[in-house]
Length: 592
Image 1 (cartoon, rainbow, N blue to C red):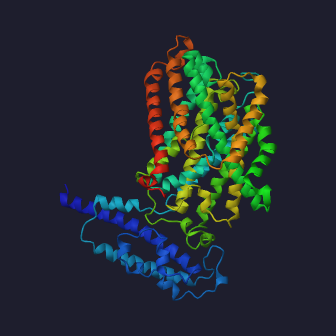
Image 2: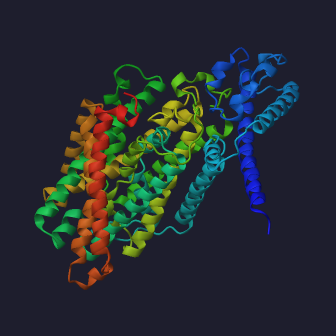
Image 3: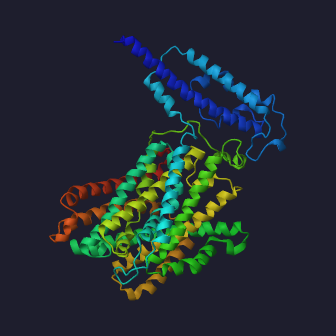
């Protein structure tokens, strides 16, 4: 048996090796950035470069090379500007020998500094070193997420092309949707332009992996309550929140649900219309249109007459599934272009577009890449995720227009759709944050250079994606209004034109819905996604009808109580976050 001090010494040596290995990798990354920046801007002083590099701790802070990181390059780098390629690297090999020599010197200094440490490495020091990750460490994560999206799209295309079925009649005498068509409609209802704000939620002070776990939690919770609405429709035989509730509970509760859905979808459609007007006005100006035709009002009117009215007049969600597919592809294209720019290094110091960025948009990794950290600013990300999966106002209609609808079939489609949306969110959070760090803006596309034509196509794509999301939100608005005021299908056209007129006039008059929209989204969103499904589950489970066995004994009691409690917590919590962001942003470490 070996003496105890031998095992203790072995553990200390292993800990020292781990710390040294992590710092060794950090040295290489810093050196790569310094070499690239020197080739394109030899006249920059060392201080301006160091502001862009991760915080060098431990051995790097004590190294003399850190004080003059460009010294070995500027003395011998005599290449002319035309000897540089478009990425900023030198085309000749004169810098290779200096790169190798400087690397060896840096390693030697690091080893000496490590040997000079009198204190042995502790668990705290190991944990500190493990927190100092590099932006390139998680390339595997972004590639994996992108590959999952590619596989899902390839499978959907295969199913659509080779297993396409003609639309069968669903409930209500309309042609039903296939599972693939329903999946795209759900994804398009869930994923909107709000995904562009998620990287800023990570940059605000939440570890990337911690934020990813939050996203998985909300996707699972919201997906469960969404599928729950299909099961309630199956048990009651109804096709709306109001009718389902009226069959199992009091009429006043059913009417309250209809009113809440009506108010929430008004704000949703107004927000969509404002985004459409602003984005397409910018597109028109980009294309050279000037004068009154380039205003947001003119852009919105043009899109309304030529795109929105034809789409909003459709009763069958099966037809809207094709535009939903286009919208989903547009959103995937946005994240794919961000992935390309993250992989090719166009926005790192010395990259193709780095010099075209504003100072506040330049990548900032002064604290490294954080994995698990949480701060008070993490509440902002939680608030965003709590409303990121809202599409429940259309859940009964989605179920009623599914071909051969059954709870099992609907549940399978919902799992696929919410998983797809979750991966999109994880992908854009990772790519946006790993490209710009703490400099990520609330609208991540604003970080990218206006001279980057690839990202210009992404701006076009997200604009069209929002256009194709509007008819699905409008469907929820129209159905909730007809349900609230008990209007028959003979009023379909008049209600459609009346509501569109109100929405368009409101969007032409307001450019920001402000606090009312944010607070309404937090309060009404929690009611629609969690509280209403829990209430319907509770009442439907109490029915003496044999069909109520769909829920068993556990769900109508404990599961319903847990979901309702989560809804109340999110309602209160979301409202507090909205008010703090408006009146006390400094408490959340937000810019005022």
